[in-house]
Amino acid sequence: MMKRAAGIWDERYSGNEYVYGEQPNNYLKEQLEKIPVGHILFAGEGEGRNAVYAAGLGWKVSAYDISTEGKRKAQQLADRHRVQIDYRVGELHELNYEKEQFDVIVLIYAHFPVDRRASIHRALSDCLRPGGILILEAFSKNHARYQAVNPGAGGPKDIAMLLSADDVKNDFPQLDIIELEETEVNLAEGTYHNGLSAVVRFTGRKRDLGKADLTD
Figure 1 (tube, rainbow, N blue to C red):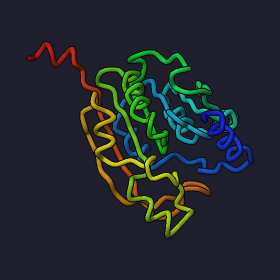
Figure 2: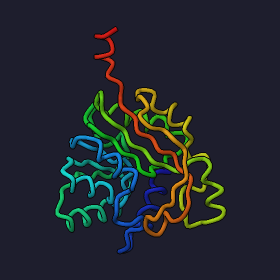
Figure 3: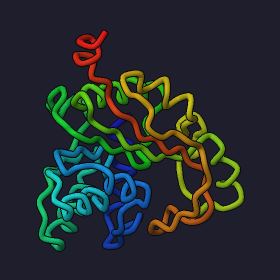
Figure 4: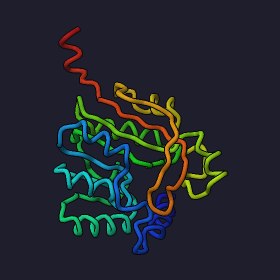
């Protein structure tokens, strides 16, 4: 199944156009302004627009995706902006990231199969250091009606792959909520994310259980 999915994304990314644009996601930009620079991981990073932006701000950037074409386009973008990114191709469990390796983890429209989503999200949480920040923006369950009106709004057609605020709470039990909302945004991200859309936005901080134990 993952080979088939990788082939779909390789085909989408194979042209010269950056199909979700070259500019970073607005929510990501807003959140990174609040966080000291460190080591950051982008999951399901596609063509690299967000990773390259963070590298330009001085972050040490790691990223991964299942698409080799995504990596090619991301490296091309990084070279153009004269920044370094460590971009790996594969699934999370194959890539040998360490526990508590990252200060920040980012998921921007990284929609996983529903039977594997929670386990992937929890594995990503394990890669986040105590006190580290996770930033997520994804299409919400309400997005299906926006897709019906405007196919250009993008997003998975399978409603099971869309997220709710409750899904986020359940998938990230190690994180304290800084911000969690379901809202409408007007997207203008390349060819495939355009128009009014329903999204979930989440920023959370990983609990430092060691410190909690010392103060109890």
